[in-house]
Length: 80
Image (cartoon, rainbow, N blue to C red; front, side):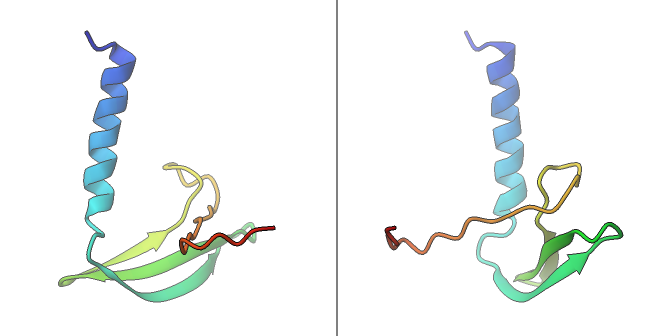
């Protein structure tokens, strides 16, 4: 039997998978840093997917409480 917490997590996973999958196959064709009233800088990308264009702002959470960060991994071990 699946607990209510596990059910909630599964629904969240399904929603997020569908939400972000819209971008699969897209091309990043623009980037700017958007600045808000408080001076925070938001990474903002323009992505074309078929005949749709998405503007993606990287946020720390779904409520937009602050700018976020993307970890970029090129698959190479940089070492220290």
